[in-house]
Image (cartoon, rainbow, N blue to C red; front, side, top):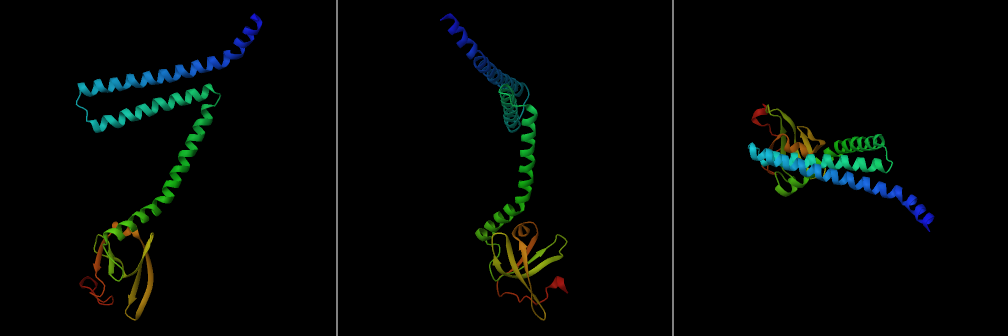
Length: 194
């Protein structure tokens, strides 16, 4: 019986030690986080720090401490810190590339929603995108507005011109001149074009 208890104690010794280490790490991280929060509160009472600054600093420190504790816990379970950092940095790199890759698409989608909701121009209107130096970029009659592009039909003096697809976000980055449909013929020269 005594030998059997000794075998059970030997068998459970490793998992119990691991559980105690994990609890100690989590408790230490919690206490450190509370200590830092209290120190920041004292610091803000002593010096007039704006809450807009204090709140993100407190949150950032909390995430840093808990992230470090998580890495230490995972190391106790046999996961290498080098493997974790490699995985995290790889994920961050892929996420950054994906974010920049879809940023243009998301920007155009949001601008399409704004164009359709606010109605800065409609189908049939003549619009002209203008640089800040009053130089026209493109001018044409709006024939289609979709989620990514607004299609303009340029009209040359000899007849119809090309179709130009302008990204919707460009209408919020440049100055836009607009004439309601039928107000001004497209082939008429404006004062700045003479």
